Length: 178
Image (cartoon, rainbow, N blue to C red; front, side, top):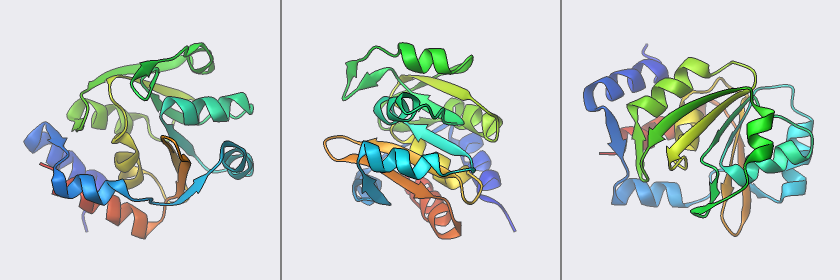
């Protein structure tokens, strides 16, 4: 049986990148876990012994400010398209990979950097462009029980613990992209 990693590797080899379309935009617009306040998010991850991935600057900064360094942080040093002071993020990660990823897309470069670095401790991925869709990719690729969290502007933090159902759902959304 093929794994999500194999299917996605083939997809990116064939297409190079994938892009949101109207159908996948609608699928991604809803909540995919509990929307948490910063305080509730910190409570959740402070109890975790499993791998933690944050996607977005504010969710990453929320964890770092609480003294918790996510295993993998994917960020662009912007929030709601405005530059932020990312000093704390940069200081937290000695190993930072840089990738280009335009808004509304997942490039083969982003896929490759995530897949090569999953499981490593303290890896930062600095995206030149936009990192928003990386959460879906991380859900599809991560081991079960990994926590993937991303910011929901104006609402809070969406955090999910990966299981088979969530991974399959994320993979199905990615496969529906153009």
